[in-house]
Amino acid sequence: MIYCHWTHNSAKLWTVKLTTVGQRIISTQREAQMKLYSFLVISCILFFSSLQAIPTTYAQDNTGAGGLDKIKAMLLRPAGWKVDHYGLNRSGLAEFIYEARGENVVVKIQDLTRSDGGVLMNCERAVTITSYGIIHDGCRDVEITLRFDPDDQNYPFKGASSLNVVYKLKAK
Image (cartoon, rainbow, N blue to C red; front, side):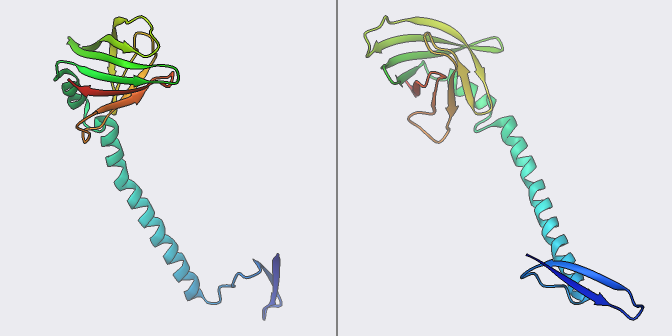
């Protein structure tokens, strides 16, 4: 509901002030200045706190959880990875071996067991290293996205494929 407040001054001019019910009319110039000052202080605090978050976000985008070099070194360090994978209608074990080929990284995949009795396959796929982990296709699966967690000693790489198959890698 809107409240209409009419006033008449000595110069015989009428002024109107519209306010909502429950909202106080600012009665003095000092009170108006204080409200403006409070608004400016809060705006400055919000502005400067958002500026502090920008370098942090920029650094995370560029280096991710452990940095591209750390992720690459972790992938290439062990003699391979034992891979547990499971989805709606299948599960199994595989071995992933990551190798550097110049500036590129490839993964050699070897199926070890399959719950559905399917043919055990082996293949080689290109790997993309991102700020958060790695992405590559499998022999049957598409777009396996693995996040790197440097704090997890058992399974530092975990994720899923676009077909909702879950992958967990453990160093051999």
